[in-house]
Length: 290
Image (cartoon, rainbow, N blue to C red):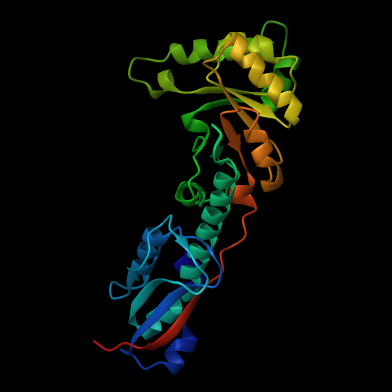
């Protein structure tokens, strides 16, 4: 898609006008900032869409911490093709490395606690697998990939449940039980039978009943630090096997405080929807000599 977007069905007319056909080139992908690398295997796939002669030679691996001025990889191949691939290549690596870099900062902020950093489904259309891969390169964890591989009973499900006709109405706790029955009725071998069940809770009032209903996870949305501490204590008394996930407006300034409450997971939408690109450049373009 990136190749088609940049070239349509035409050519890089600038390079065709200025660079003789068959000219061999080499260039370095270099970082202008410290950060964490992500996307090198995907970059090789992207380059193959341009030409089999265009080769990426990595000098680091995804997940590596890099310094400003460090070379990540060297490109070799036809100079015209190399120039055409420059921007899509950098778009990919800058974006994914930015996600990995921000994720690493969150992961480092909660070190020494049991909390793990998770992403969300707040991803760019078509980029979800790549963006979630970048989170893992930064040391984070992936929440469900989509609606198809996990159950998350959210606030809108619960609001609707309050307004259904009386014979279909459900509370947060009964919603958990209803979903458990639905999944348990799936045929043997159906992946639904092993799906995790998570429910969103935005106040402590509903928490005891939900804990007794026995979901796998409870998403504690936009609760204050004291409320999170109370939720952890309540979980310990009523259902120690249930994991707790804190979510909602999570920032680097607050995440360590949240992790110290004893929650198991902290989900951070900003990892994918608000990470700044890591500043990378294609430098030192010159003729390639064997």
